[in-house]
Amino acid sequence: MKTALIFGVTGQDGSYLSELLLKNDFRVIGVKRRSSSINTMRITNLLNHPNFEVVHGDVTDTSSVYSIISKYSPDHIYNLAAQSHVGVSFNEPEYTSQVDGIGTLRILEASKTLVPEVKFYQASTSELYGGLGGGSLNESTPFNPRSPYAAAKLYAYYLVKQYREGYGLMAYNGILFNHESPRRGENFVSRKITTELSNLLNGSVESIYLGNLNSVRDWGHAKDYVEAMMVMLKNCQPDDFVVSTGNCYSVRDFCKESFAITGNLIEFQGEGLQEIGRVVAHGESGITNKRIPIGQNVIKVSPKYFRPLDVPHLLGDSSKFKKASGWEPKYSFSELVYEMVENDVN
Ligand code: NAP
Ligand code: G4F
Image (tube, rainbow, N blue to C red):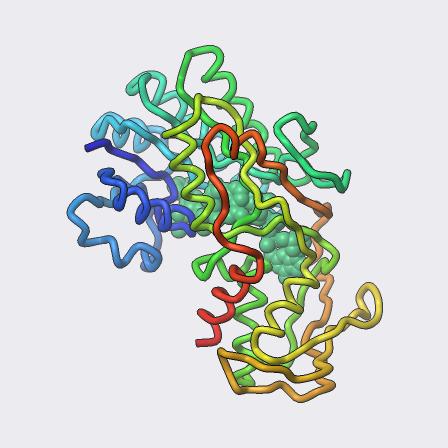
């Protein structure tokens, strides 16, 4: 039985990846950092699995990285650990660099020294591109990071290439576009919309406050994307691969789709800080019979959620990866949003 070591096991992707690897007969060791309250909610169902183990460690702590890799001698390492919120990275740029940038260096160095035959997966990101051009982005598109998060991830991306080309480490960059799920952190825009929609239906809030509604993202389902991580290491030679759906939607579209699923149809009016999303009609819903009064202003814009720099448009072209691996996403945008809304409303 092969051993997979996951840094970032308590996160959205770490939890789905653990489930998938266990189903595929891996022994999974998950690294969890210390926290003052319980943060294993996403992996509770796995804690008693005979092939699953959680160990304490932190990618900002070199000694813990070395001792864990030395103790378990993994066949595969997935580095998913990150301060993963782009907006937060503007407020905590140094910490974000330590975790997302130098943290990757620590794991690569330990891998080169202790387990040079390991396959190493790095959670790279579409944020590397900056998204100013508007077209479809692939492995040849130039990078233009527009946040401390993206700058730290770019540093990590190039380290992975250097350890692959310089030391022969079997190291992969998965350049993943946005992926969401009912397990997505509640301060990312998709999950914020679906949790706040649930609060609106319960009457505990009257409006949802969002930032840049114009942003366009290539949103996929996290379950599809962790499968991409696993098949990348299984089917492909070490390289850099874009993973995306090839379809994109705006934050405004995400709002409209979410509300429509609950039978509350909204339209947007106005511009800039004055833009509002308003309920204009009622429709069918298989999830709830609660209806928000027609005319209620349910989406408002708050400058609090604007970033000093934003990434306007991300659309991926993953033809290289699809050809090399045979991977195809199973979830459509509508199915993704439906699952998230259903989970939060119920
Ligand atoms: P997430 O839910 O925020 O999970 C991040 C994980 O990293 C959590 O388990 C977190 O632990 C852990 N972590 C944070 N700091 C750490 C540290 N110092 N030492 C050890 N672990 C630490 O993120 P995700 O959405 O699953 O994304 C997984 C990875 O893919 C991240 O690297 C992210 O940057 C990258 N990525 C994500 C997307 C996306 O759309 N989701 C797209 C491209 C790339 P706690 O639970 O204690 O916070
Ligand atoms: O949901 P977001 O915070 O995700 P973002 O910035 O695209 O980053 C996510 O995807 C990256 C891959 O491209 C990952 F690398 C990264 O770790 C993370 O998982 O924001 C999406 C867009 C942004 O343009 C943001 O400005 O939505 C806009 N937005 C509008 N209102 C908002 C809000 N974002 C958040 N978080 N909260 C809002 O109220």
